[in-house]
Amino acid sequence: MPTKSQQYLKNLRSSLKMKLYFLQKLPSLFFWGVQIKSVSPECGQTRIPFGWRTQNPFRSTYFAAQCGAAELSTGMLGLLALVDQVPCSMLIVGMEATFLKKATNWITFTCDEGAAIQSAVQKAIATGEPQTITVSSTGVQEDNGAVVAQMKFTWSFKKK
Image (tube, rainbow, N blue to C red; front, top):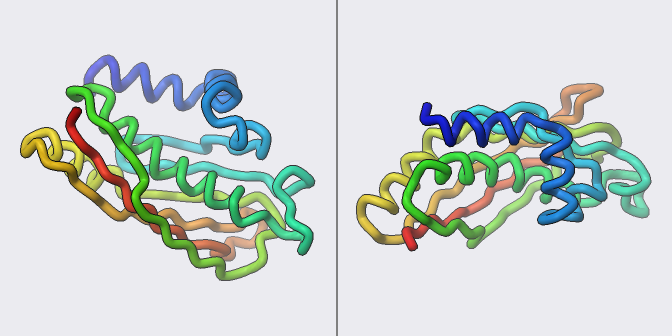
């Protein structure tokens, strides 16, 4: 793995650096207390707490907070795929969410489609044509292992 990618992974794994990044660029993630649990080029995991900042009136985790944590689990894999490449843009062009159970504890969102994202980025660079890819993130409640949400994000990658 190239040096730039290694440094980027190190930054993603730094709790303090990510909190500062969230505060500056993604304040809702900072407010909600979203954390990066683990990250590699193949898999990204984020987690979100259940508490007053993320709670809806029905005493479960607000759907938008869940979507933000799930998006981060996929988006950081896209950013990681772009680190050592020519300038490219990435944008969400579609999203689908299914909420299966009431979320009342910490939730971990996992996306393990990093290789597919890297392939889409490489194709966008090689062809010069925009590439879209739909990747999924599954939310599992940490206290009981129940799947509470399944999200699909369609990302577009385009060489600038």
